Image (cartoon, rainbow, N blue to C red; front, side):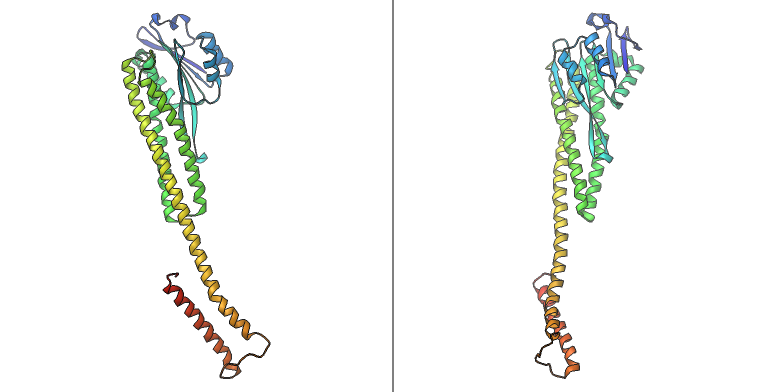
Length: 322
């Protein structure tokens, strides 16, 4: 699906196609072309046929997944940003790249799936002519700012899952929780892989490395850059928390295992002398008889067992093993 919004004579309206005359900065028009779930042929027809973009940027736009980057091609700037969509059931931050082509008076976006950010900005442009009338660079800022703002709910959802898992670990650790912790670690790795490169991309836009970004829009990108820095710092804190949580879980599981082994060892130690005594008096050979006659000898053996067990338990307690 291709959506084209054009701002002409102070009015923003949706049109069916791009008039080649609008591509000239002298036309006074500002255009936004949004390609959603478009086929490779449709993308090539728009990028190469109508806008005559470089073939390398066309290939990158068609590729399924590219890392965030920004490059200048003379009359336009090509950049790739990622929007994230946290899927708790699948334990991952899904990344969806959005390709941007920024010209003097146009913006072309290419993405797959429904994007909350681009859909919201499209509705804003339809209602408010000023949104698209500010220029192509300002429109680019609006879209990227909305994408970064949508990171916050995903981060908060991840934080809630991390807090919940911490409570489970300290309430009663188990080896099963290790899998959940490692899944969270994978989530943080996905988040850092998305945020950190984008921080550098937006930082270049904020530093006015490109002539298409004027000073007023560069100031706006500085605010977006600050947000990405905070999210990147949070991702590093998440990494530290998860590493500490994994260590704590392994330590607690190890202590539980040691406690179990200690109990089993003590039981084995207690029954070892009892087994020796019962084995000795159960042999069919002549052994020294205990006083009191044959009926009383059984109770002598029982008393010896109790005395040995009690002595071992007292010894273990004095050594601090119980």
